[in-house]
Amino acid sequence: MIPNVLAIAGVDPSGGAGILADLKAFSALGAYGTGVVAALTAQNTRRVDAVQMVAPSFVAAQIDTLLADVRIDAVKIGMLGSPQVVEAVAGRLAAHGVRRIVLDPVMVAKSGDRLLAAEAVDALRRLLVPMASVLTPNLPEAADLLGEAEAGDVAAMRSMARRLRALGPAIVVLKGGHLPGDTCTDIVEDGSRRIELASRRIATRNTHGTGCTLSAAIAALLPRHADPFDAIREARAYLAAALAAADELRVGSGDGHGPVHHFHALWPASRSAD
Image 1 (cartoon, rainbow, N blue to C red):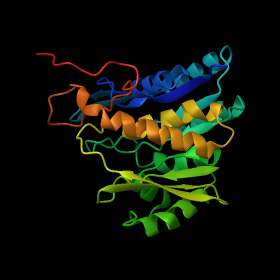
Image 2: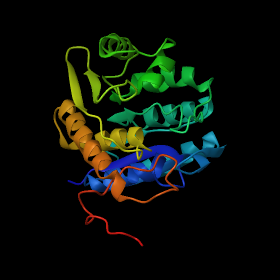
Image 3: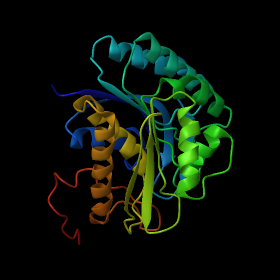
């Protein structure tokens, strides 16, 4: 059966991140994508100029109307923006008994612009983190959730992953891409198992939406795997290939962070647009 997967996130008009990137990842991995818009942004590959929050009651109405009709096999949660929207999403997902929740705690854009109000971090930690089947923070997001300094090496990441797991998610995928060096290491921790997934850092500026894409890929693949760790491994391999092919795209002026290539396995290799 083809899984139906829901993205609850913000809209990035450039298509590299947020709900548009989520839907691309769902489609590329053979899942049927649905979406609930939680925020609007005026954004390109270089910066975020404005953010417009969606009313919490309307976010809740989108979820209720969709789930009254469509079977949802997994949910990816991205940018929510405000504590009121966090509360609305947590309440409606709990009311509908939704399973397989992948939470990407989006707080800051690649450009450095903040996407989650500081007062919303506590609501996220209290209400949604304990509901998560998989929590996928990067190092700055993990530090924000725990109220501590960023991990500076893989040993510190191991300890941080355990403390994140203690907040209540079933599995933590702590992403180490912010550490220096030629290797990127992610820690996957479920309380009884911990694995370290290392890969070569791919030389490209086109890294916009990597966090959104990984969490969306995990959500698309969870319904297909009995062991969530297998879904995480496959999602990570998908993202690595999307990054490796990212320079085939020509999106943006070139001095920002372009998107990854979600459809690298489906589209023919690019040809010059000149």
